[in-house]
Length: 268
Image 1 (spheres, one colour):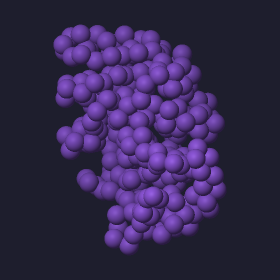
Image 2 (spheres, rainbow, N blue to C red):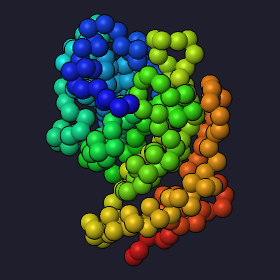
Image 3 (tube, rainbow, N blue to C red):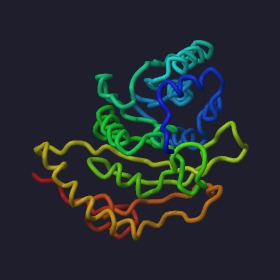
Image 4 (tube, helix red, strand yellow):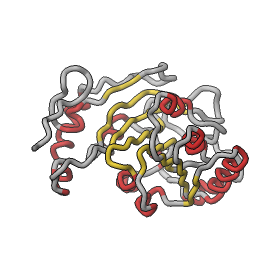
């Protein structure tokens, strides 16, 4: 997109029903929750009218939804009251999630990552890290570059996801899924990325991980050459799953068993 939407643009869309507001959780994220992937304290970043925070709270989890649209937050709070669900909705800037002063075990991004330009995307990734507990997981659902160019959010490639989360994150998998909207009965081709914020290692100096970034980026291009992602454009196959090459993230070899990088023994 050449002209990125502003906060006011998004707020104005909630005077009606935005195309992403389908009145239920996205099927791919509901499947993650049903498989036990949503746990602990949950943050729904860019929650809109709150369906994913409401889903987590209905599971008995401590859930918070944040959005920059006052109208969206008002609608989310109304839904919570009507359904009798205990969930917190806050007006907040997704580019400054650290200002919440809290960290979460699970962070959900349904359709927010793909709205940012390059500079704000980097800020957003840093913001997500500030709100994700060490060992916590982030789920990013975004438009795929398999969807033809045109109106709507920026199309995102697997390379962009890997590159955006190459520093102090572990991209565990990228899955081809569908993103449901009110515009069509057929889902839009999308990626669902499962990303972990690794726990801090005892004795690690703060500069060590940052200092490894250059090596990670040098390995990224080589790793993507072996990244067995789906090809073609169209409705993704059910359960289509892509595992990330460890070299793309660490600059090191994979374990050889398809499960990712070899892990070096922890230093004593």
